[in-house]
Amino acid sequence: MSATGSAGPAEERAWPGLDVRDLRILVTGFGVSGYAIADQTMQRGARVLVIDGADSASLRERAGILEVLGVEVRLGPEHLDALPADREIDLVVTSPGWRPDQPLLRAAQQAGIPVWSEIELARRMQSADGPAWLGITGTNGKTTTVTMLESILHHAGLRAVACGNVGLPVIEAALDPEGFDVLAIELSSFQLHWTEHLDCEAAVVLNVSDDHLDWHGGAEAYARAKGKIFEGVRSACVYSVADPTTQLLVEEADVVDGARAVGLTLGPPGLSELGVIDGLLVDRAFLAERRTAAAELASLEDLAHLGARGAGPHVVLDALAAAALARAHGVAPAAVRDGLRAYRMGDHRAQHLATVDGVGYVDDTKATNPAAAAASLAAAARVVWIAGGDAKGADLDALVATVRDRLVGVVLLGRDDAPFTAALSRHAPEVPLRRIDPGDTGDVAGRSRLMEDAVRAAHSLARPGDVVLLAPAAASIDQFRDYAERGDLFAAAVSRLPGERA
Image (cartoon, rainbow, N blue to C red):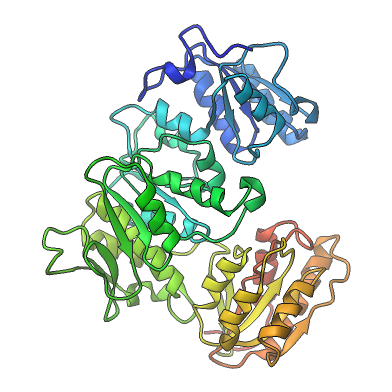
């Protein structure tokens, strides 16, 4: 294998505005980002081969579109174990789903072939006068924050888009022919692992708790991947004052001279922080007189529509993070307020579905780990918690001990309820518990029946003023097609509940 192309090695080509002509690119993974990488580089003269271990009718249909344009696509597991033997490769651009120890990726690195993420490629290919990047990562809250930021930027009159781990692939947004002013980029730890040059104008790590440790090889490597978002920041590194790991990542980051650390707190902000005073979201970081004054950005009332009982603390913190990034880009306080007022939660993210007989029903099926569930549970004083699923070996004791005083009942899903029942028996033995018979969930009817039983059980435990919350703290794969189906079936069951609706 060779690491050189007709115009020189990929890593030695000048950027911004990287010229990919005649670059021999191997794209690993044919999902949304893989397709976008192949499309954008092929258009600019690269010679592209795409491989994916799956082989389905839908993939073959998409492959046919690219093959007409000169991209070769190889589907099937036989292509995953080694670099292609019949061609030379200058650059591998990998899907975030591919683990670092994947044999083909290791072989590329051993051969001296660079392995980049789509994000790395997009940053290098974007022109010097392209859109500013505002980056967001964290274990939980990324999508809420990035879509809040998008709303704020739109209300500031900017052409902006949420992209990355949500919405458009970054490479499509960065190379959009009409040109965006700003990209609000959600980045997972998987994407960040293979990225060396982000150079965001401003970036935030919302929080760091154990997740995806098998992929990264441990908690330290996972946190280090998250911290990559701060590398090369030009204006502001934003972190949570309550999460010391995020502050440490800021302190360790290699940033442009003049970039500042900006803290987020749910209490009164100190100097160079955003926080909350008397029900107001305020800024003591991005105004000239920050030593003696604070700028009012919005009120908690402006966020009240984002929860059954008002916005929970984690939603307020997400709003502060979005505001900080917008302010780092020069957005006026009024646009922050208007963007937050107009913002609506996406499906399955702390989504208030209905109030029936005085009981709120909230779908946070995307809370698939204990940290996300803890944040969701903290948003209400009295909760009937629908939990359970594939706990992935997570420690549930700290979660239950933290939220037990809020629990008025627990309804358990999942084929194996032992991790949850053990933690509940140790830390909340007095809380009423209903275990839903798994039954047969091999088809939609069975899965619908399961969720119907869960919602009825929760309804029987709840009283006016309570919140029934689907925040499973576990993956859905043991009983549902995916977390979205779990949330959709929950919403359908709630819609069938009898009672007066507010």
